[in-house]
Image (cartoon, rainbow, N blue to C red; front, side, top):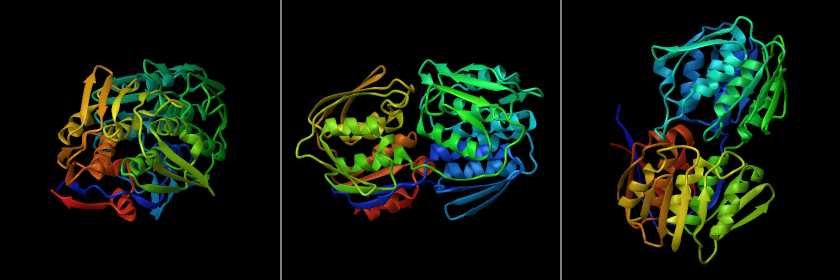
Length: 421
């Protein structure tokens, strides 16, 4: 299969309005949650992403019937298989989310250990610990997680890891616990808005969940769940990416369909840099002040600064005079974009978990290689700022998490085209 690249002729300020799509990190566990019921579920505002297509393939391989029309998914899993194969699961981290629903519904699961972006070790030990706390027997052999739990019962689950709570682990335990006997208390639960959105969907299905969005979530098991309808929350990471791109290109971009309360930490740092933000009639408009100032950023679990926005901010900071320091506290190996930005003329030095950005040097177009989803977005922003033409290779990463990014950027005036390489 031919790989695709983006050709970006930089130096054009982005101007106009852009609609923010449904959140990738919310819709994937939501799709997995439909396995918890025999009845039909409808999910709206589903983004057109490679990861969504992968999850559709996984659900179909498990026996679910999936109809996809526009931005709406209709899923009915009347009969289920219990094995999620390597061929599908290897493509993305989020596929591990089928473990909890399979265990909850059919009391057994065989799920391939997942793949995804190369941004450092992301072990699934906390997921397995959570299943064991519900009474499941779990073992990993031959590249597969095998779990059985004929008598799933509520329990105390602690999901804190060395880098904070696990988002997908919290989702997995919530879903399995929804059909377990008794009450489950999840301590050190992830507080991300995507977890809250999943809880809203599960409650619409009949689940009993309290505390989603806080470090303590209580799930009282029920005998069965029913079908439900839900609209996915807007993608806060996509919103942050376009906001940063607007400031980086000296443009003015209005985001439609965005929730400011999900972007507090990002808005704080953009304000510190010198961005101007206007809220009006449910929309947010981003532009830059005349001069920008350096900032220090440390990534943390929500509500801290998102690790998924670190790379995009680094691209912006390469053009901010002075020294900025970015410290990555969530994932290892998440500075691979620094070397590619350096190819464009950026001055970035990586020292352990920190990157020192000496900003103010103009970027020039170059051939660069995307290493992961958010690194890809950083290189696109770099290309939009740079003088000349930038070719971003391996953009299949981008297509995993940004819906029609080339179309949306062209709608804002960017000179961007997709090409096969």
